[in-house]
Length: 147
Image 1 (tube, helix red, strand yellow):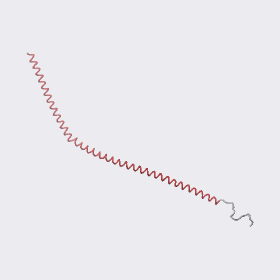
Image 2: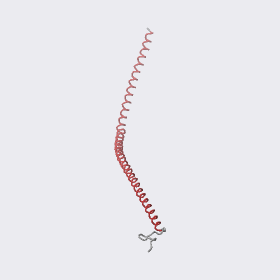
Image 3: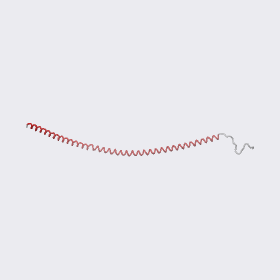
């Protein structure tokens, strides 16, 4: 029976150790639970004190950025329309200027041709007047008839 008392003692010690392990695990679990609760509380306080105000500021800034982007988009559209209008106007003006330049050139070319023709005619007339001509009989008077 001596063996049994030793076995019972060892079993009692093992049971005691197991109870201590369970108590230690329960204490550790309660400590961890307290740490988790304190951490959650600290995180909630951090979120309330810092994150939410910053998020509000960021949301406000983002709404301003959206508004500015909308204004930029509208302004860009207006600038593109005005640039297209200016381009069309310049193209039209260039075409009109080109057409008028051709017309003026053709008028001056025609005027130069006419002036050249007149100058040639005047030269021919002056040359004809200045050139000595053989004597020509006057009308009605004959040289071969006795007077």
